[in-house]
Image 1 (cartoon, rainbow, N blue to C red):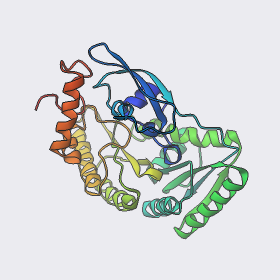
Image 2: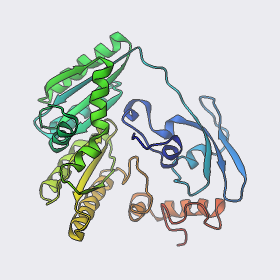
Image 3: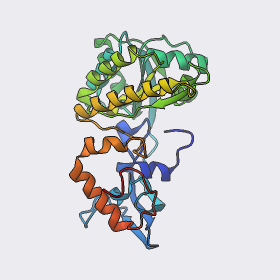
Image 4: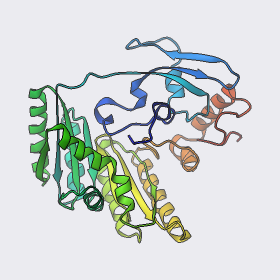
Length: 328
């Protein structure tokens, strides 16, 4: 998902990357762990078998625990074969709603796309400047298809039809490895590109994820919030699995801009929760999202999490103060 990502860090935060729409997050791709507990015991969880009904699923307990229950020291991950054929494409849309609806229909049709990434017009402007590209500055989707030659062709034809029905244009293909690499490097460098829209700025990013059926509604309402803000706020997202990010660019020397970013983030999270989503799709809770945990899970569920923490780490040695308060 990023240049500084590690397998351990991704496991600890239950993270994911741009391929999650097809291959899943770390939740689906970690088969087993070796973990050192707070009292020094070393345990192994999971097996390499495809399935198991043997007791509690301790692997899933530690994946996403953000270091609060133990130190993960060894990870067994699932591997996938390289696909026979890979093809990528980009297409532009007149509105964010059109782009997101095309994504929703693609997923609901069961097209096994490997990646579906969204950029709004401001984000496209940023990557054009940063990566010397010439994309139309309008909402855009980046697709990638994996499979056999025939299945990739079939997937692409189906998606082209869906895109056309949702007013998409400029369907551009990238089949050579160097062209795909240029395309995805531009997407992965979007964060640094967006910072250049406001030199000297810092980005406060959101990370909500909603059911795919509510994604268009959520993104359109969020766009209305951003249009009313004084901050530049480009949007990018792994929209194939309902996850999108807003990068609110602020001057760190101006407290009022940080307050504006916090206000926007709060509204985005509240909207996602109202739509059956989550406050964090892949970045974890840490400190900043602790306040949303009770709203998302309820007091009783947080109490259960706290009980697990007390049982495994009674002295609160492991990453104290993260995810939820230890004493309540």
